[in-house]
Length: 385
Ligand SMILES: NC(=O)c1ccc[n+]([C@@H]2O[C@H](COP(=O)([O-])OP(=O)(O)OC[C@H]3O[C@@H](n4cnc5c(N)ncnc54)[C@H](O)[C@@H]3O)[C@@H](O)[C@H]2O)c1
Image (cartoon, rainbow, N blue to C red):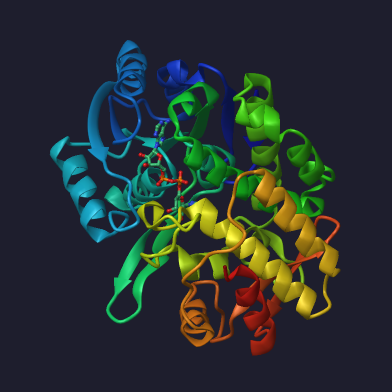
């Protein structure tokens, strides 16, 4: 299966299916205009060695000399240190502007390797090879790359430094999901449910219902269900990104900013070290997708408190998240004021105003600037366990 991302200056293809990673050499060669001689693989340390080796072989078969480095994907590592280390290694490997970066891993590796590719020699091509469900359905498509900023007093600020740098191709091989821990797989479903809640903005009505009806097939890793899940979500995201590549649409139009549904609440709790999805402290901190799931609950409750959606939507959102095995409440959240301060630092703020994406029901959402404090507090209250 293929999805075309039809951007005016940098169109590219997302290849979806079982076993497509074995074609990375061929796909990479076709995707670049100038012939490359080297391919620098930034491999997620959690990806099985056999997957990395298959990728290296496919590149070598196409006369692309593979050089591989490994990155341990933590939010703490998605910072300057890793970026600098990658850039130094690119230079040591003597990559030039026609050579390729292959980002082989989850969203953390995709973001930091993509950003390194964006700034090395003012930009070299990157092929995104997502290996988590979350990276396949969301992070690898659309060109957002970046790192977190560790701001004294404010903690780790998610994705504060980055660049729009579109890949030359994306390869989503659903076979690699077999080794993904179940908790990580469920975290990816949170972004799919988010897409379902805004699907009417990209002419994908029914995405949420289809996702809800197919959860058992996803959990069983049924290949046709997984391919369709990735294909539908990538098609959806491609349409949104095509309309507003750099998230510049005015608030009343929504545009790409709608993809941030749940993320302002979610980012505020994602980097808090002690939060666990299931009361077991050994499971702290939350994964990105788990924080997004809780953020979807908070955004829906906030919207309901403003009368923007029916209160039944909150029940529906909780029900589908619970069926997907995702948290809808979390114990140990800091006081409202502390969370609202962190939310105010979110990079989606504009002109000092907090901007929240709130669901309206029927697959629609809208951007609300400076929502009243009571409404934000209602959102936070809905997440408290
Ligand atoms: N750029 C974007 O548009 C965008 C969109 C959404 C999320 N993100 C970012 O993505 C990140 C989250 O990504 P994620 O959920 O993929 O998490 P992740 O990158 O932390 O990976 C999750 C875990 O799975 C392991 N792993 C990866 N592939 C595996 C495989 N095939 N088998 C076994 N283990 C495997 C990793 O080693 C890691 O431990 C966050 O930093 C988030 O901000 C970016």
